[in-house]
Image (spheres, rainbow, N blue to C red):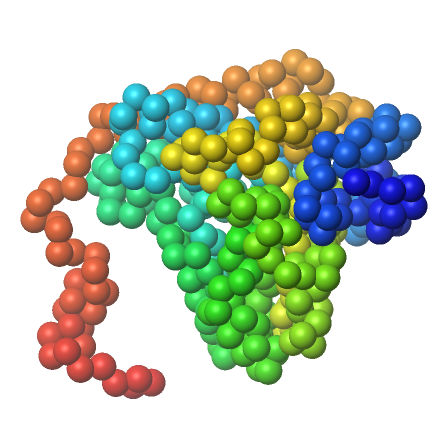
Length: 400
């Protein structure tokens, strides 16, 4: 239970005032309803968006059109996810489906900070990240349907979106498997003498995987400009964090064991997200140093659509209270209305356009063709597909 004065205080909380640090949700066994009650009372006393984070240089540079684009991108992700759930429910999509509903602000804020040599890689909950970097709904929905017009030609499905032309490298199904790959991408930037970074996203359930810690060790030893972003929703696949991870207050604090910088902040405030992530990107660009960032967020649905118990290990009331009071889209909408950037009518129009685009993407997927049987052996090995010497002989020489 919460005790008076027990909360660790974040002096730069979501309203720019002293707030109980949201990571204490997890440190004390995720007493979410108690935390929400305290947070709700604080927010009622401080209803405006965080002035301190809004005044960060990276946020002051935002034009009104940029702010609207952030809102549009979040709405597009949510509408896409809701439409994909509808398709899954009637059997049009098979396999796994990990929805990003409730976490849209994280991917959108991160993508908005990417420069020409910044890259992104993530795990299997990848739809939001893919759309945030500019992938089309059509290619993403078609991939869910297994159609040849999908971004991975229908061979990857929900967990394997890729867009190399947009510096987006997946979409990986093995828990923690993307973490050494993100390290490699960031190493490539340094090796090539480019000012860049790789934001490697993972969930709180992946932090105990061996490859992640091996990656941290190399990142610290070689000063690799990689940013590990933990999207901490508190429950992993269905087990509360206090039952699955040993940690001192924050998962990101494990960075100290590798002499690495770390930070932690809220995931429902776009200004706070951009300000916090920008610091990590600047560290990567200017110092070629790695960072672990932990973001407190929340998924409304289960671990995947197949997670039938997501209202058993957490209550319906808990989910509804988060949706009502901490929904990132609603909070950003009200921020922009208060700033005079949009009106309620503008918001309705943006939402309507996103819904129409999502519906159109489903119709596109329905009309698209299945991959031909003759293509079954293609797209496995690049060397074979492109008839390189290695593909023809089975031999490969590095650095030729």
